Image 1 (cartoon, rainbow, N blue to C red):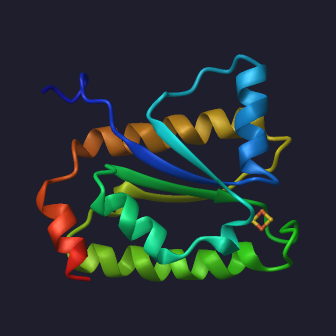
Image 2 (image 1 turned 30 degrees about the vertical axis):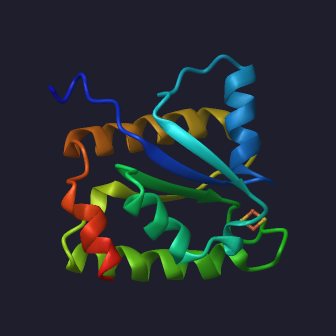
Length: 145
Ligand code: FES
C-alpha cells in the first residue's frame, strides 16, 4: 500500500464543550477535513484516562488526537491542564518504548474555532499518514507498558 493510498485510523478524543462543537461547526460550515478520525466525545479532556489512549493504540489506531478547551475555559476548572501534563508524560513514555511522537497529538480548540479545527485535523492526519500504518508490533509493545 502506498502512503497516498493509506487512510489512517485516528482516535480523536474531543471535549464535548469545545472541540466537539468546533467539529460540528466545521461540518455545518462545509469546511473540508480528512475523514480519518473516529471521534470519541468526552465530557472534558480531564476525564481522559491515559488507559484510553493505550487502548486505542492497542486496538489498532494509527494515531491519537486529544483536543479540549483552552486554558482558563475548562468547565471543570483545570481538567484540560491536568490531562495536558498526563498526555506529555505518556507521549514521552511511549516514545521511549518506540512509538513515534507524530502519532500522538494534543490541541486546544474552542467551539468557535471551526476553521482551526479543520486546519489542525488536516495537520494531524498528514502527520500520521506520513508515518504509515502503525506496526503490528505496536499493540504487543503497548501491552508490555
Ligand atoms: Fe473542555 Fe474540560 S470542559 S477540556
